[in-house]
Structure formats: structure tokens, C-alpha cells
Image 1 (tube, rainbow, N blue to C red):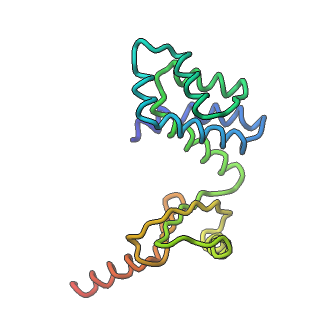
Image 2 (cartoon, one colour; image 1 turned 180 degrees about the vertical axis):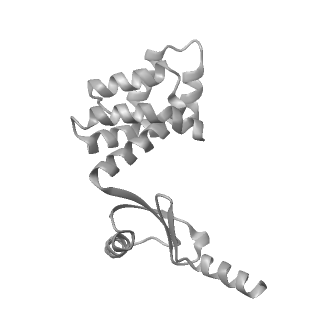
Length: 177
């Protein structure tokens, strides 16, 4: 996985430098759509077919993403396709978001919850987490029923686990020690 990150880093940095001159948020949304399309196994096998041209792959990707690309993004996507780096596109987009968030003073917070979180509750949770982590957070909620109850929050390399599953695991260790 480190190799993929190494491949993605120069693309992400160059892309971010150009995006700063435009609307970084809009570019991020467009890149998310392109990365979603690039993850499709059928598209990947289509792109790997030696009889298919890079222009055909580009046309299929832009049609599937339903996005009108700025000229800079067109050049970026063509470069990725020409260099056979379609498999690294998700890593490029992830690193692009990290750079954009760092510049904005925001960090991504992945919140795993056993149950859906209402918007009002999420706002309270995010406010508490921002105080706890000492920075502005952009929350992404993902359901994980195995937690039984509570939440697990991942911000960068920090993890805050208040789930019932984690508490049960700690009790198990204490009782068996």
C-alpha cells in the first residue's frame, strides 16, 4: 500500500497546487466522482484491454462520472490514464483531500456508529470531538453494527473508541488477567 501512496503523492500535490487557483471544494467533489468510477472492476478491465485507446477510456470515465471537467482536470485525467495509473486514482484523491483539509485547518473524522446518528446529535458529537481533538473536523459517519452501541472515532492516526464492544473487550482482558 505504501507504493500506491508513493505513486499518488506527486499527482495529488500537483493537482492541489492547480486547484488552489480555482474552487478546491468543487474540484474535490469532481475528483470523488472520478475516483468512484475508477473503482469499477468492469472499467478497470476495459482500460487494461490493449485494443482500447486512452481516449476511449477517458470518454467512458467522463460519461460515467457525469461531470464536465475543467481543462486542467481533463489534462490530469488524461495523464493518469496515459500513464496507466487508474488504480492509483483513489489514493490521489484521498491525498488531495488531506492536502486541502490541512490548508483549511480541518481534519477528517471517520465516525463509526452502531446506529444511524441524527443530524442534531451529529452536530453535538462533532462539537465535542472538535474540543477533544483541538481542531475543526469534517465528520463522515459509517454504520458498523458490530460495535453494539456507542461510537469509534478515527482522526488521522488517533482513535477514540467509546463503543460497547471496546468496553466488553477491556472487561474480558481484565477478567482473564
